[in-house]
Image 1 (cartoon, rainbow, N blue to C red):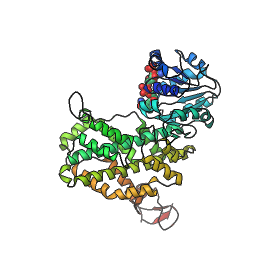
Image 2: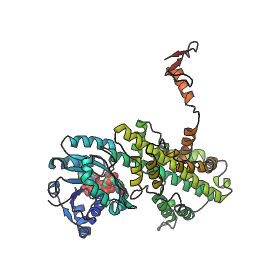
Image 3: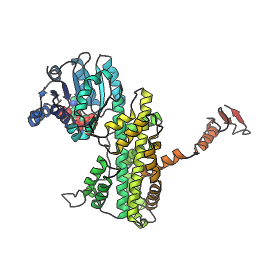
Image 4: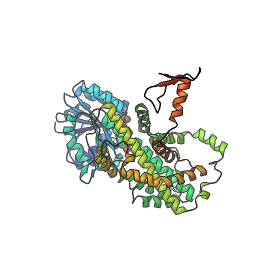
Length: 480
Ligand code: NBP
């Protein structure tokens, strides 16, 4: 046995991860349910490093040095359980099973418990960066035991993306911490993409600009605070012309956004933890809404187009100002989405005793992953200064950016609402900040109503204790 690490599941992600490992000098055992994939990897890239292919799971396990480290990179869900079931009987105490797919963290927690009972380490690991990241350096978010990280850390840190000499990989925390953080990362990605889409929609409707012209605006934005991978590829996608029709590519793509589940899981978990991640939730619902084709058709014929009194183009007087306003609103909304995502990570960490360092997450997301951005350096700095910050929003740098954006944000939303352009994440993000900074919320009325119909009691502003008003009687107040 000579392989230092193994990969089973050699579709696009596993194949590229295995190549990345081999190119970095590790000897890699290879396995895939369908042998043809293993063979084609060796045929196409066998010269890139030391690959040890096996047709059977037993030979694959036998080719690994002990304690063994096996990466599973298959379709998340049943396939992962099938592979674990085939693998585990062949393993021995202290071997490490790494699930690098997009597993639901609840499944990861279950699998870790099951394998721990057999003396095995199970390491649920988030991997972000898509196909290219897997090959050239992803952002890696491993959970599992500290002991397993002692072996895996040096390998993962070597194959991860590097930013300013720092690897985009850190031991996130025990148990399912890694997959939890990857899930929230994807949730933030949903919000980020929806915000970009709303900005594009506003610019297109407000300026009557072509996708190619809007691509230029995004290209310019990418040289400032908004500098990020997603803004960069937005410019690329908007500038692209469809080869078949000669139309802008964006106009020949069906406007129904798909999802694989990580956004939904993020929102479900946030509901359980009571964390208001409004941006991610609105972004997830916006994708769902886009897919409700029959409802959209019915509403379109009922309300005729955008149903606005004044088309948005007629509302934009100063084009330059409008572009700047959209930019500021996008940046402020993005800060809100990240603030909410980091709140979610902190709540999940507290609930599960994971001890996740939020600043370390910002650090490992600076490179390799889909949400990589200059902005994450700021988040890293903010948490380095104060890891117990109440909210990213109140850190001086972000507070200033949000406060500076207020006027733009409101102007853009007034224009969007009058012109009938839907901006769920721009809007809900401003509402979130306005609610947080309100000295008094109408939640007091909710409490009054709850006490009225259900005797749910309330607290007073001027006295300690819980109280109930006898609504159906003489409305006297009693201690509850
Ligand atoms: P897929 O998610 O398309 O899965 C294909 C792989 O799963 C193949 O190797 C296939 O084997 C194997 N597999 C299946 Br399906 N059912 C199996 C079973 N019952 N037993 C054994 N193997 C089985 O591959 P991918 O796109 O490379 O993604 C791999 C993982 O990485 C997923 O969890 C994904 O969510 C995650 N991820 C993907 C990206 C991305 O950008 N694509 C990014 C980050 C994370 P076969 O060849 O025999 O059919």
